[in-house]
Amino acid sequence: MSEIVIIGGAGKTGRRVGDRLADKGIPVRFASRSTPAVFDWAQPETWRGAIEGSASAYVTYQPDVAMPGADQAIAGLCRVAQACGLEHLVLLSGRGEPGALRAEEALVHSGLPYTIVRASWFAQNFSEGFLVDGVLAGAIALPADRVTEPFVDADDIADVVVAALTEDGHAGRVYEVTGPESLTFAEAVERISAAINRGISYTPVTVEECAAGMRQAGLPEEVVALLSELFGTVLDGRNSDVMPGVQDALGRPPRSFSDYVRTAATTGIWGN
Image (cartoon, rainbow, N blue to C red):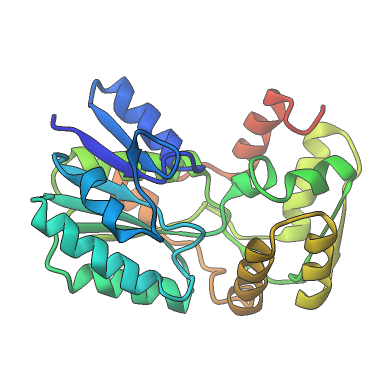
């Protein structure tokens, strides 16, 4: 197959998609600010060179597709992609995020063949994201009390993306991908605690208290602002429903949070 470009290849899903495509013998071009094929969302002049010559693309917007201005950036990228003859674009989006929906609409209305993968909260946020330190410290505090979330495994997201990039029948589809069960954050933390045989407390806090904690932990202000906005918007139950995107795209059920926890625990990432 022709080369596939991955915009954001260092992220949780981008590197997984790249590995899977490479295993299939498909040429992959990673495009970011730090790769030979330079791509910078803040510098549109870099976009054409990063895309030109590729047949299709997997796009993750940094730092998040819900950010203000992401829809304009996606619309601009689609124009460049069409001029370069791109045949298919797969976009990673987020559930229940107004900004993400605007970005999706920009892609849908661009006329470019597309697939949208709309994901719930990544399970890997506990092992590869900003919650790792909380697990290691034995205490996690988030602005979510009884709300539930069907945590999705990033490996499932990558499998859906690869199917969309390499198989027929996925163009024009929106896959809303979640895990098979919806858990409270306290329940998710309990499962991690049991797997590593170490106590981890979970405390629901306000968005403001969570932001203060993130700042104290040294997270960049841009990340604090983004997470605070998302926490204040989407952790209200709107995303609690389990959705069939993984089954629809792959013909198999999604991996459970417990399966994810068992796998992550064997890596030693949580110090067990």
